[in-house]
Length: 339
Image: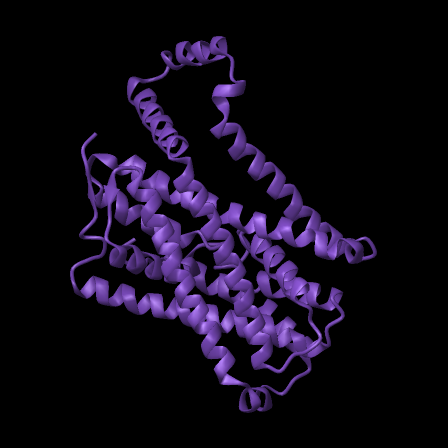
């Protein structure tokens, strides 16, 4: 992970080519002169969008550090932000935006002492909490567009239905895990323990540690719920960022409910491993949902502007990575307490 391999670069080139094709498809549908659009753009709104993205990244790093602290692994807020920024860069090397998570796992487990598995679990839980926050915002948006969705074409209904299905399944799965003491019979628990004895002791011990780590989150449910609320706020901020891009391009006629619907559906679908960081796939989904909202073709400039902004932040994360390598690595202040 410290040095990019040729296979990583080739995969990035292919993935970015797919993303570029999708973005160009969306942009061509706008029928706009980019030189004119950029010359007349309101850069003040772009600045506000940039600020929202930066604040959102800082808050996301704070959310992760609080979940990591529950696992008795300490990390400074600066290192959490630095790792999160570098993770944005590595999102370009992983389909669906998971490259950043892999990067953080690599560095945190290397520095977390005897709490490697717990540190890695915190990143998985952070990703799950982030998705749950997305689902919360999506489901809260649904009643405001329900009537329009009933008359929408099959493609729009399928995309929204996919988000609802994932929300119910994902949320239901988390509830089942957190409430297992209420529905899992003692006899079955004993049966699981007996079955576990047939596996290698090392594997059983690892599984037991992960279970204890999950139970830590169960015993600190208020902290987890605060992280969930923060995630919902972050996804709302991400939507307002897209609104700012629309304002910058002087796009009118898109209701706030349609912005919220488009962004939540697009971010859910872009998490599917199709393109790096969701670039391209996110643009296509937003294009279709703005078309459903009755927006004029120039609204296709909005997903293009969003992709360019995300690429900017990814490049900025790459600068963090370069300076971190020159200074001798990242995450050097991460520490784990022995259990």
